[in-house]
Amino acid sequence: MNRSDVIAAAAQRSGLTPQIVDQALAALQSVVTEALVKGEKVTLPGFLSFEAVQRSAREGRNPATGEKMHIPARTAVKVSAGQSLKRAVSGA
Image (tube, rainbow, N blue to C red; front, top):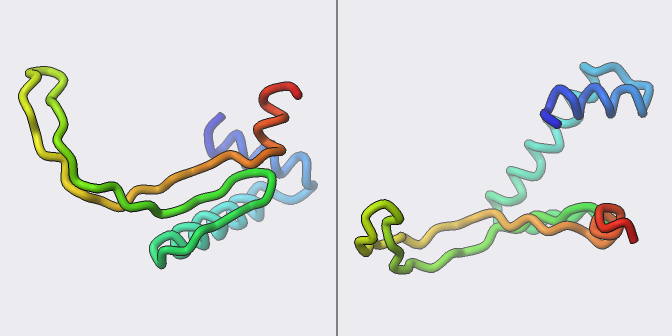
């Protein structure tokens, strides 16, 4: 399911226009991005949580050649599913 599919489905279920749903989705994306850049955790209870985490530098291997390579430290985004989403997907 891509962005257009999500917008169409949400518009149909909510009775809103696809344009309004697209604006709301863009606003949500912007809010989550800004919060993560600030180092804040974003939680949508029962659905998803987003958190910026620090990954330390480490040694890795090039899968094509097998030679060692340095992987620098960086900030990454951790996304975790909430309990309601986990239960729905597992069929529980």
